[in-house]
Length: 318
Image (tube, rainbow, N blue to C red; front, side, top):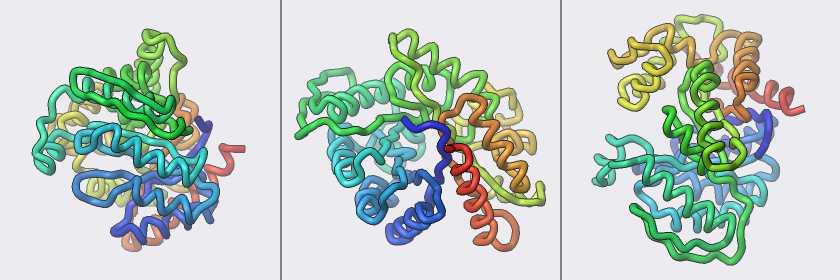
């Protein structure tokens, strides 16, 4: 796995727009691009197959591909294609997504998400990294072969202690989202280490996914964050994580200023660079940045954030 890398989560209204964004990130010197596949929207793996042919250096990662709608053998087949087109550049992140999304969109029964995820990871890693799998578990069965093993780290989303422990035991890395930095340092990383120790393996990397807003007005930055990531304070899993992190007000389903300040890396260029480096110092191996656009000119705000991320990313890598 790569070290001290800062990448960007790409959001786009179409596949063409996503491809153009990935190409621009590579031109700017951003070392990694990330995409999410969720609900009934665009598919990250298909988009990355196209991006692989249009780029040369930028790392490509999913954060995340929801597990419930697709059998792990199907995801492995798709990942094999992207890995073949972008050798050494593709990282696969999977996760259970949200109960409301899974049950409403797909009509599936969202039960025992960590149990499902454990078996999902075991199947993916065996098939991709060993070239074959013969698995019969409680939730999944798989008997499949591919032409040859491929170089694809298989990571998983993590939010609370047990999911970080699971990643420590089974995954090639954990991917967080909107977790306060101190929570990652004091809860997530020790949990990963405990899971890895129990499994008799080294602790895998932590990829910290964080909202970032380079902006001079703190109130405008907070307002933008509430508008763009407000959902997560209302989601039960996230509210529980915030409570674990010491923010009891999360039970109200809204973002307090203290929660936003702990989660969103905001301020001028100097302050945001400090927060990014701090997150790496806490033990994150890599950071995924989701830009938060603030103020009247959203395009200019996003551009300001991307330019800072590109500069810092090149600095921390070498």
